[in-house]
Length: 122
Image 1 (cartoon, helix red, strand yellow):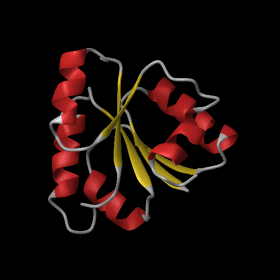
Image 2 (cartoon, helix red, strand yellow):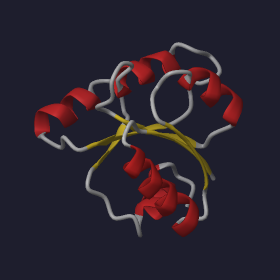
Image 3 (cartoon, helix red, strand yellow):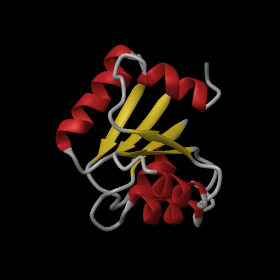
Image 4 (cartoon, one colour):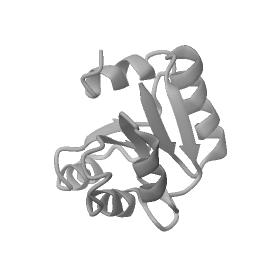
């Protein structure tokens, strides 16, 4: 299973890589911003994208919009990762369509298994 992780927090990217690659035995590629996300996603043959919501421009929702506008990436499953788990934030993300939202903090030991279930790859 191949996952693209986009998060502007370098320490969190390291933790996500550890959780998904080392513990979960997934193939992981990371980006520190959404710049170039469509090109990388289109060329990477990813099973899913783990996307931080709160990033400098482009934000997570802006990245999602760019992905959905490109034929090559429009069907890649996107899972939002957010520290803001309030009802309003989650509701706003849900309005973007049927995208999955994981809240921080998460359990690194079970993250890969949870992603497999969410992406129906278990």
